[in-house]
Image 1 (cartoon, rainbow, N blue to C red):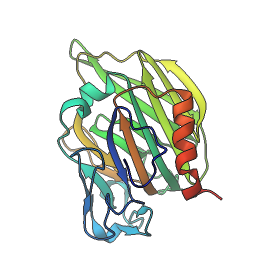
Image 2 (image 1 turned 45 degrees about the vertical axis):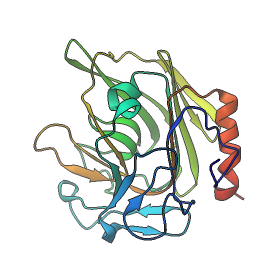
Image 3 (image 1 turned 90 degrees about the vertical axis):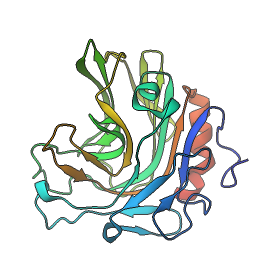
Image 4 (image 1 turned 135 degrees about the vertical axis):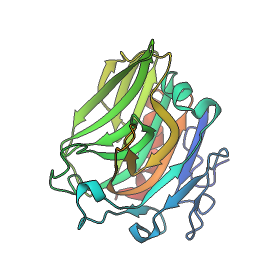
Length: 251
């Protein structure tokens, strides 16, 4: 049984990191442990992150130009099995995160090439959760006969500094996005599934361009909890997960 909350859905839970659980993060060092498997993460760039006992603040050096960005992030390199980009993205899955968007536009739209903040993504061609100044987005990159294809779904939101649960659910070819336990939008995935240009590195709070010469950009967020499931959670299961943790973040 998971010590931090016995109420969360555990069926087909493939990855769980939780900064509110000492078994996942001890409070010091760079190791972040997966509570249900061996997909452990590493904190990178200690000058740009800080821990408060339940969450990790990932910061950016905003004195630098967008092309020379520096910041803190969390990374798992070389996922295998069900958590490779191809196996995870192109089968039924659920990605759930708890975080705060501390600054939705940290460079005041000064980054004209990649004006985006990554939340949890498979790096390369960035599949997963990210946000712009006025939207939350979930993307699935795929391939058909070697041709790269992207399917992205979004909903409007410009909130800053508020704890938020986001959930993306793939069921067959349908993608549905939730915020705080409530469905926001859904659509039909059109990206092919015979390959993906996303790689097997999962990153929280940063992304690096796929092509040679692309640069890295960082996100100004506070992050607490990530769950990745090998199944499509139902609406009631998503609400159950929200209720299980909302008391930690809301009053």
